[in-house]
Image (tube, rainbow, N blue to C red; front, side, top):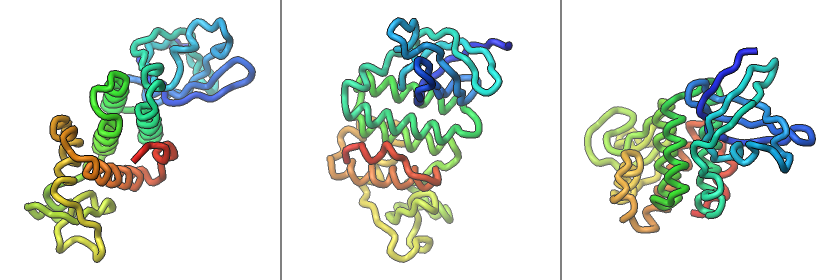
Length: 240
């Protein structure tokens, strides 16, 4: 059977039988892959810890009839233990891998892979607040998937200027002429934070007050889930 190697980040796992596990991974070159890790749940397994959620590994697989089989796994990023040791980081990472799983159902993306690995690395190092890292990841992930939000010009007609009506169904901030009646309004500070999260302006993001960060998080959650076409179960565990 054909054998191949790739870099992969583990999204989720499921038990299979008494000792095996099905591992869902987002790979660098082959998109999303579901594969069986045989004997991985045994105490003496040589690569069990390398195939836990949030871990990045160099894996070797061979193609099976229904599921591929993992034959080797070498650690590239041991982020799992550091992330799970902090509740905020753990819940943020859980939302990230669920989002990546849903965004790559049909085919993989190198950009999505690199974005996820970078976000998990940042969480493990606690480079920024976990909620800021999460919201920045979500905005960038949906943008790469083709749903980039507009936080300045009108998302519907392109009218220039500083607008305040936020309509996730229309793609972001819209002008008064395009805003449906009763559209929620955002203050300039929240719009500025959303732009900073999208562009990676961490100095601006970190300086934002808690109230502004909370409002921006609500917008990001609504925007992401609308464009995914479904809710994110793990998002309910993230402290707001």
